[in-house]
Length: 180
Image (tube, rainbow, N blue to C red; front, side):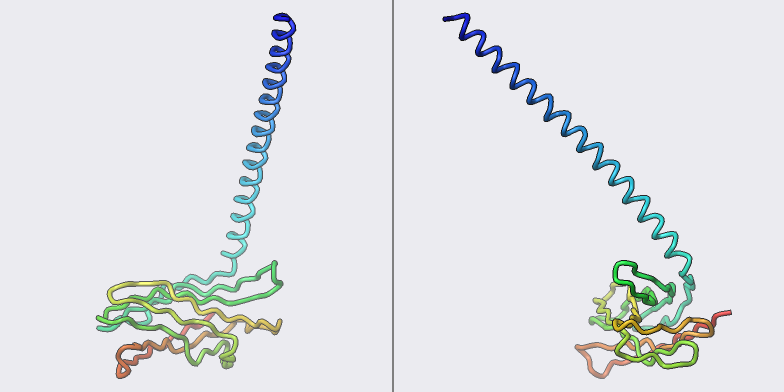
């Protein structure tokens, strides 16, 4: 009887150890698969970033620096989103609020290559607290699949700055970029 119990326990123990070994192997294979997927994802992201950098126009052009705010035009980039099969233009500003209240940065009167851009295609509204800075991005995107301007000659707009707390405060800075 004791031998039978010992044999049963031995078989049970061998079964448990075998199951643990399979689980460990499965976890190792899973971890290796995840590592390979992560490596593939990083490589894809780097490829996308290098492709995106080809359409980037680095400017770092100071637009305004006064008692109220500072604004620098950082870059203009044409981006193609394969997922949505859409193209957009992003204009990136670095903005700083020098006032004691919160101010808002918006894009007005945008034109590319001498033609006005429909306001329905524009999105930019960045709120910046007192003494803080932020990245303000103007996105020009046609959600209906229309053609965006080519950015061959020039880009112009007004950077409109105002305060929701002080309706008397409004300033604008002209943005002019000529492409060669």
